[in-house]
Each structure stands twice: as C-alpha cells, then as structure tokens.
Length: 181
Image (tube, rainbow, N blue to C red; front, side, top):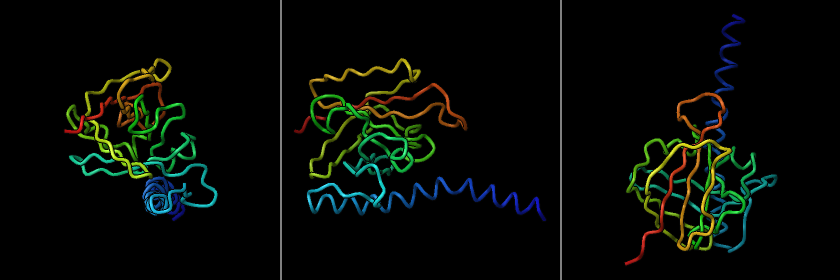
C-alpha cells in the first residue's frame, strides 16, 4: 500500500512540469492577446517576471508558442524566452530565442532546413524566417553574429533531445528572414 502511494506521488510530480507548461500557455495566450489590444505589456499572472513579446509558429509542425521577455530561469519554465542582448524580433540583427527541449522546444528535433518559422510581435509586426540548418555546440562555445544586416532568428535548446539530465550541449537552428515579394 505504501509503495503504491509513493509511486502515485512520484507519477504526480512527474506530471506537474508538463501540466504547468500547458496551463501557462493558456494564460500567456490571454496576456499576448491583451498586450496586442492595449498596446502595453501585460503579465500573465501578477508575480510573473516576464511578459509576452511575440508568438512563434512553425506551420509544417503545427507548433505555436508565446515568447517571453527576459530570459530568466522562471520565464524559461513557462515558455520560450528572448535572450537578453538579442536584436528585437523581426528587425535587423540576431534575435536568439531559447526554450526547454522537453516542453516548448521539443519540436526542434523535427525542424528541417527549409521550414518556415513565423514570428508575430505584440505590436502586430509579422516576419517569416526560413530555417537554414542546425548544429550542436557546447554552451560555453556558443557565439552568434549579433550584428547581422538582415533579420536573423536563432532557436536554441538543450541537446540531446532525449536526455533526462542537464548537459553542456545545445542544439542551435539558424533562420533568415524571407524577403517579401
């Protein structure tokens, strides 16, 4: 009986992170919509340390996630974050967005060169990027050309995708803005 109860408790703890991620996306979608309609940043909950700044989607994979400001550990628990020091999304320079491999960026294992990534900011700007490719790099050797002359999007997550512990490796995908024709 005690072992069954302990097993149920452990299973419940294991379900908390994915459940929190799903619930957070619902609250973040509401905050994103309110930010769009009011033109002012809106926190998804009063104690949040970040606000929605954009929505990222990958149509081929049916993925849509809210991107948060700040890049803090708390923000990363709830969604992808725009890494501090990045260029504004959709503007000249390199915008770096990071998220956990087992929740919001689990789709990155299926990302392919040529995939389109769409970014829609809270101010209504929309940019489309085409994935050029991806590579694995150590987190302490990760460098991005921050002064890109065109909008560039970098997506980063932990690697390998199926690992259950933290490690020094990151998977990085590079996407360049598509020209409007």
